[in-house]
Length: 175
Figure (cartoon, rainbow, N blue to C red):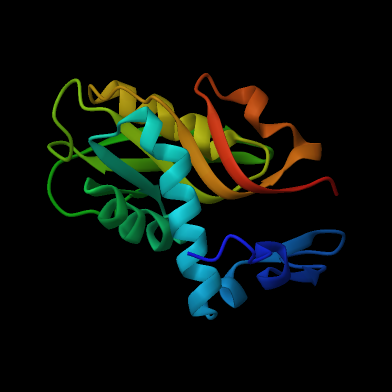
């Protein structure tokens, strides 16, 4: 596809969202542009292909938007990692610390087979807390996590330092 598409031109910056002092990088404008969206999926597929994933795990909710079409492009399955209480059936959960409190993510107990290579996908890597928790959860259910991938990385927050797997990103913001 078009390697000349500058994906940063399709990311909207929204100051003071969700609270004052935060600059939010919004992928809605990227999703709305067919050529840029297609280029995003192709570039992410190129980044993940060398890791030979069997399945992709998307983190609720924007990770779903990326992981589902990316799984089609790679010819893999797709599973969802969701907040507690959102998945039907028997689930396995992992609770992790946030700056102020805790959060919990879950996966269906039978979502992946033991030993499956599960690449983790989300839209953005910030502090790395949720992504690190997701790696732990996937390993707890028997998955092998060869890599994580996201469209945007906020490098100044050094989230990749919290992860024990390689991280592939398409765009980096230093502030």
